[in-house]
Length: 478
Image (cartoon, rainbow, N blue to C red):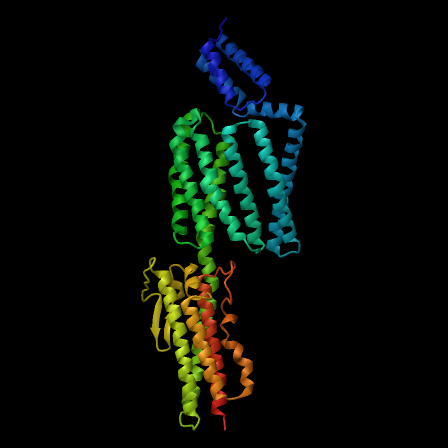
């Protein structure tokens, strides 16, 4: 009769202890059961190594864990309740989210309520219960940081997605916390847990490269949310590392080690296809689609400017020989000076966004000089949604904003001095900068370059509209 040596029994014991069996009596029974199966196979002519491999294949990679979960479910009431809560909340939250997406697409009422309930269930019922179940099943203190980081990253992601879809304030901050939690804590913790596993020695380089690819990808999404430069480059780098290097390498190693394709590998392939690649394509096109919504508005304001400016110039030409022309010329000259100041602010903002830190730069592709002044070519801006130019040039307290306010105040004083008509007082709101730009500094003043330039374009058209009224009143003045 073939019997196992002490070394063989210790090897089987070590392997089973790695399965995080928390019940000592269950662990002893499993060790005894596996040893008996191995001895039975050895009696049929196999050596220990071949017999043990055959028993492990017969048991499967998940069966040992399943036995413990079934035992916990039977003897631990708290575990049973948490597991049921995890299953019910997971299914309910996912179904609500699915129907909410359908209702949102169809513009049916109740989409917001369903999405909010689904997110709350997933974030505050499913995630805590899942964390509790994982801890009950493993009791592995080395993985507690992994579980907690996964919990917070998922919690921030679910909550941030809800806030983003519902257009609630703080969505960017929460999604940023999700990205930072994943990049700084969860992904490194997951990588460490994988590379410390002795059975995964051959796959350690793959795990490291795969973790780097995921970090690049998530960091790119974080940069995209914050409208920071290099977002597209980071996302492309992450997709290339995952799709071209890590995934083929993992497939090659797995193909050599396994005799058949496991369901886990199939899920990995499906996950890569359904999450990483489409997610990258959507995010890489997000900014271009986002920009396309701004371009028509900017171009319309520029066309409006040309139209209003042409009308005012035509009026000046029409009354060139009139006795009221000198007053009209004063108005026209003062207006041109105010518009020139706003043009200079726009040019400085573009220069700041196109240049390097502390070094303003701009090419002819971004700004085109015309007879009516500089015209911004919005489609050629490399960083149209950076936040720094508005903060440095348009927010209250900065020098250019103070200069603009002072120039508009002087313009209003000049207008009140010539007093062409009391009915023009109703048009004074066209000159109020606070109707176009933030009137005070607060945490909600997150305004991109494109939005700031658009506000200045609208302000210029308001000034031209006001000038038209002034010129018409001056021309008809008796």
